[in-house]
Amino acid sequence: MTLIKANPEAEVSQSFEAVKPGPYRMRIRAVKNRNPEKNDLEIELEHTIPVTELCGVGGDAIKGQPQRVFDYIMLAADKQWKLRALVESTGLPWGDVDDSEFQGKEVDVTLKIEEYNGEQRNKAGRYIVKKG
Image 1 (cartoon, rainbow, N blue to C red):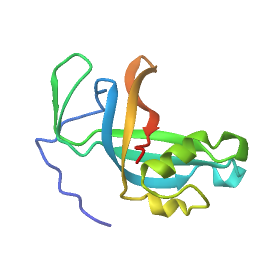
Image 2: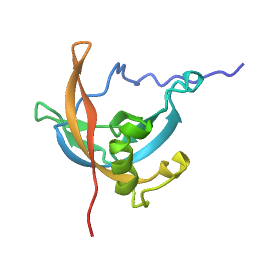
Image 3: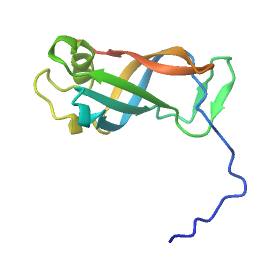
Image 4: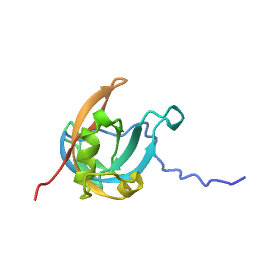
C-alpha cells in the first residue's frame, strides 16, 4: 500500500477547456490499439498541444496544463485516408508503419469543436501535410 500525499491546493477539473478551432502544432503523447479484443482495426491517439497558454473558445486565456485531444483512426484498407495524412504529417514515408513510431512525434492538426454531453470539446480534424 502506498500513501499518496495530497496537495491541498489541487483544483477539481472534470474536463479540459476547448481551444479555438484552427491549426495547432501537437505532440503525439500516446498511441494504442482500440478494442484489440474485437480486432476493430482502429488506433487511438492522444495529442497534447505543447504550450501552456492558449486562447479558449470564449477568448479567455487558458493557463496550466497542455491541452489533450484524442483522435481515432480507422486502419481498414478502404478507410486509410486519415492514416496516410497522419503518417506523412510526421515526416514518415507512406507505407507499412509500426504505430510505435508515432510516439513523441509532432504534427500539425486542424482542430475543430464538437459538443459532447453538453460540453464543447476539441476534436482532431485533418492532419496537415506539408509539401516540399
